Image (cartoon, rainbow, N blue to C red; front, side, top):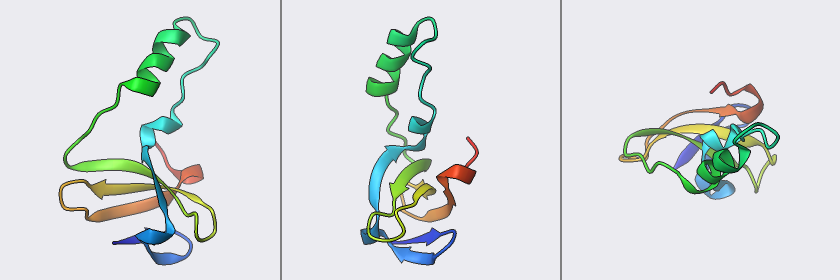
Length: 89
């Protein structure tokens, strides 16, 4: 599987480490009211979608960048990739 790195071009997926759902970037505020419940949901309640999904990938054996990869979990087709810094939710 090739991941289209936004700076380096197509890279083999073996250069990357998969880190889960890209919604992990939206960490709850630990000082907000209801923080304990929000962190419980953040840590333990995850979707396991079939279809198009945004995922975090770390370019461990490359430039050490973080990417948000949009991938179809049924076909494994990569639909796009953005640097985490420039990825909109």
